[in-house]
View (cartoon, rainbow, N blue to C red):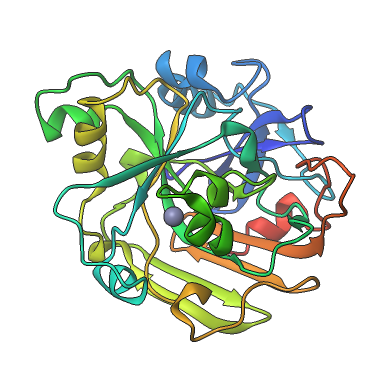
Length: 310
Ligand code: ZN
């Protein structure tokens, strides 16, 4: 059975839940509160996914209603958000770069993670805010100095949709040689709606798309990734310890505004990002005001049930 893990509730008060099909094939939400306080590294490292399957099998989990409830990111705040750059050949070309021979790695602060339907702030002075749909890996087992790609595969708990929002003026001309300023903005990593276990999905062959105000922007497939998910985890483990609950976003395909083919994000725009089997995000954008702290606390108008359509 394909499971979808979700965290439901207001920012900071999300409750762990799982979406599973009943005997008639109807998707239902079940509370995981009896198994864990949260969907986090501790839950994933202690075989939480397997324990959830057992609990569902023995009908131990109470059904809940998700109607009108905010959807949070599907994992609690990670220790690290590690990012891969230029991992699709056509995106490297539209960025004016040659495809890398080894993975390009950078980091985002973990406080950039927000819910998949939260209203999304454009920085006060930004004119080049850009979308990036990406396959996100969620780590389930510590990965350090792994000796093989097969071993790396065992460290992946599951997958989710991510948007790697990027401010191109801050990222490239304003960066003095590295990307951090354009990749650290408040609310710039919408994640979710679901965490789907690695065993339940073929992450190497998933269509991923972006639309802006309903118009197509990105449309590619994870099979076009230069470095696949296990290869990325194996590679990263040579340079850093990946901990359970950490998130790795694996690069974006072509079709971003940086290409010059599309306008950047404006206030009022609606950006929707979808990966086959992993669900759909939807963010409405607004202009953050100078002097107002950035935060990911604004909740989206879309509910948990809206997320199940994708
Ligand atoms: Zn990216």
